Image (cartoon, rainbow, N blue to C red):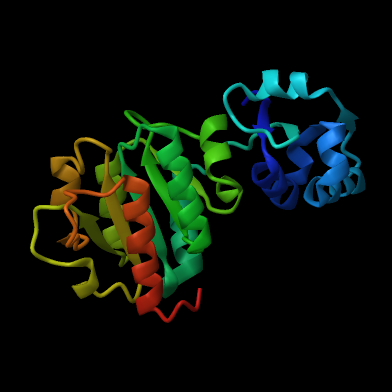
Length: 250
């Protein structure tokens, strides 16, 4: 995978904390660095790892960042390959009864995927699973939006999502899909034990076969005048409901 620029304090912090060997260099706006303690700390961390640090004019960072807010720091990064689907069984075996998997059936917006990764990392999820086709992968925009979450939770791209769901069931993982057209509340589903939480795409929701493979289908109660939540918000709600039921011990 080719190198790309990581933009902003949180993404750069995540890369240095979790995979510093893949950070090739840091570029900082010296004026911002002089008054920002967090950037100074990141520069010290980079130098401790023998990563070159260069001061550059803000205009150069603006050009590298494009529309993103760089906050005075960018890093040239060689992303690792996404976790291979053959490794998923090992991740499930490692977490056992504490398995907590987030499955995203066709999320195409990189900001949504990034936000889901951020929530999954905060919940210490076992993995996030996405299909290889008709879904966004681990792009620089996703990495920025994850605010370091992409470095903390395995993202597994699978060739056949239905087959993967069957394999999860065979491994003893209970699967709950989220949809708005059901009477069952997520607050009435037992999320203790190994579970996978499935959310569909931004517009279409879960595909038919995906839904049929779920053990339960539940909705997030919304007494307000809204029909649905953004997929990343819904992911955060259900992930932390699972943690609440488990006593937030993860």
